[in-house]
Length: 320
Image (tube, rainbow, N blue to C red):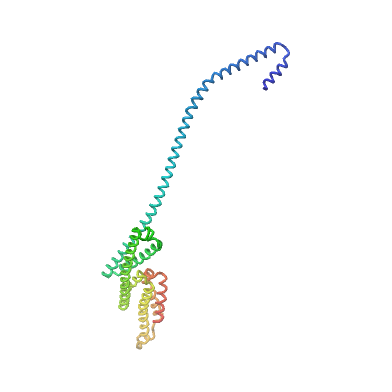
């Protein structure tokens, strides 16, 4: 197009025959070259058509195979999805059953632990191992609270939920078993409450005997039993009264010594009583008493109880 325009311009500018002849020869040569190139391209037509046919046939077959594989894969995925739904449903059911089984196992463990506490406390009472008996009673009461919490969490419909109609066998069996369990639990609780009442009476009596005999070790021993018996307030009051007796006796001894010094015969140090030393001894007795029993008081009655004991002992010293 641009070349043709240039050629036309060259033609228009020709002024002699030699230039026109030269341009003619060049044009003829160029035409022959184009014809040869066109022949070469046309000679490849059959090969291109054959290759295209060869390419088209396997491509269609391959696409058909791919389509069939895709359909098979779709069916497999759908089957897998259905299987996953079924498995998920089974897993949920198994999880629910596992939860129920775990609840039953926990209940069985509670019953066994309660039974062990009953057997242990009876054996301990027979051998007068009151510390072990108090420990079993405390453990039983903790198990009692756990069982009440478990029953409250299960709800009122937990018994009848396992079966169908009330008249069905599946509905009757759990109710009967629940009634048996409730009766057994009530029997165990009644036995333990009886033993607990006996141990409380023994603890009170033995503690009073220890105080009367000034048996310090026995007094401390039975004072410790008030914590597992859940009678810490009463035990604290009794133990404070005991320490008041001890410190009060020491204070009265100090006071009597002062009186003897003041009322002694002439020349025997009469009127030379050391009041400062007496007060120092009194405060020392209070401090030593609290220091010796600090661990017992904190362990048995709590840290705040130490202040109550201190106030009670100090009041006894003021009244002594």
